[in-house]
Length: 414
Image 1 (cartoon, helix red, strand yellow):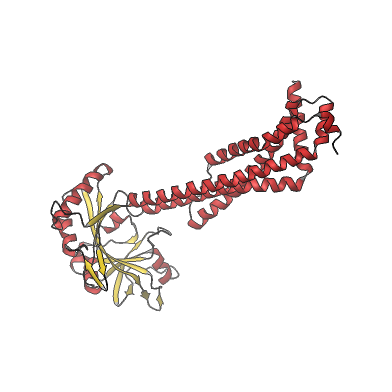
Image 2 (cartoon, helix red, strand yellow):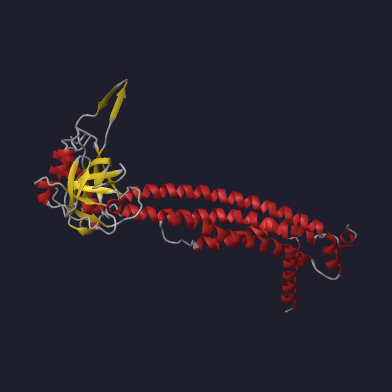
């Protein structure tokens, strides 16, 4: 019980010593808080970015892979040489693949008409940054889109080459004010006039500007957005996740036949998935996390050196106090504990402040990205433990130095 009372008294003396030099204490706390803030803030921000990345790539179509061309160009002087066997995927190949793909899956064919189109409705028009996609009736499903109102592209729209369009929510907001219903309204895309038959559900900000687009039948794109060697993409969504790998293998083998590739030829097309792209982005974020964690630890190391220096100054300034305490019976362990308490308390105060600032700053990124509020509980606990270790490490040498002071020499210190 006496020992517990001594510890409480030592803690009280340590707190009093900390706040006796308020400015020095505040500066030390801020140095430590900056290191913890860097760690927690960056970790919180990366968690927010990772959440948004996974969410946005998931909206590209769950369990979907895409067959795309693998362009291979060589330039010698002013001349460009394209690899033979048509690296681009033409209309015939895309349709042939879709017709011959005998697998429990949904297949869609699409092509980019324009990434910089302007859409007009009466006197209103958008900026020239609207993406126009030519697609079939299965595209919405494989691309992860949902209709808010209206209908999907129908087979008759493609067969009869109808001027119908499905618009994104951003276009509706720009062109149709005061709640005007866009369905069955005539809009202009480039030089063509189209009837709005559907409106997509809003996805929010994403990497592929998913709300700022128009989807028209691909047959219409072939006629009104004609370009030489138009490239097509093929998206495949197996009926279940378990069939994914088998579907990829079957699709690759079938498309090699469609492309007339010999068994010895290298594939001149790519098969990619949203999971693959998401893994690449997460890998980049992981490397950023490692780099910033190292920076945070370096900052904390600098803070520990600064704290040790301040504690050594404290020992010098309070040498006479230490002598008096030893003269009235304080043992070396109690003197050591007092200075360790001070160092750990300063670190914990800095850690708590750094965690609060880090969560606040990190969630500014969440606010910008419209993500959920993130609290990295594991790193909060880790930050407090880290501050405790830093406090012990920085305070140990000054505490030992204070405990070893000769009381007679200390009493004569001026």
